[in-house]
Length: 121
Image (tube, rainbow, N blue to C red; front, side, top):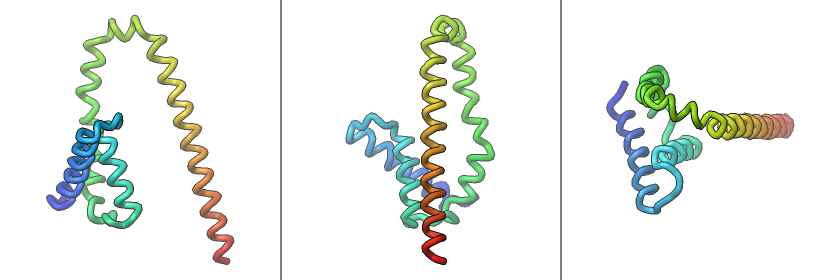
């Protein structure tokens, strides 16, 4: 893992947090940072090898990031149990909506990819 790769990711995360805070956006800075990193990768401002090793490390150790929320959930089981329906309905609804949107986006990408291939033949 390279220090340079970590610095690239941390810098983009910092920019995302700074922009979200200063512009008072309703999007968390970390999410905005991920969007910025995605755009930078798409536009080839940042090339995948510049962050690849660190990204693989983070994804490989992702379970560590879920320890704190899991402990927090266990501390508030009584509250969660009393609000179960109010939590589960939006949770399942948003999951289904997210899966539908991801499926439609995938279909669109596949269609565009096939039309490009057909045009290149």
